[in-house]
Image (cartoon, rainbow, N blue to C red; front, side, top):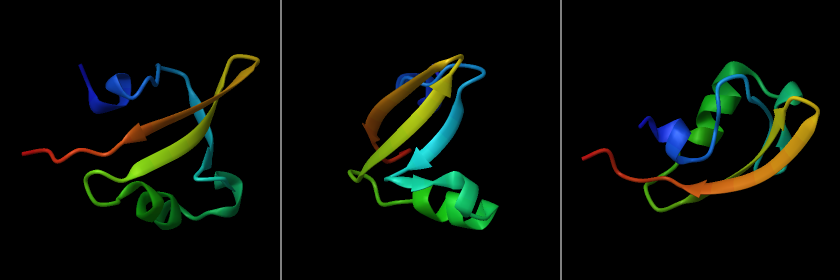
Length: 64
């Protein structure tokens, strides 16, 4: 029931890219900045799940 779960993420998933940018090149604040967008914006991520790489995207929603 968490927002991450609703976006398709699972425990143990490792986010590799946010909107095409490898997170290895980002600071923690850079990662947070890329994930803090206005409601309605779409975020694309690449996730490592075991030996698999999964491309997914989700739309941010307002918490209210």
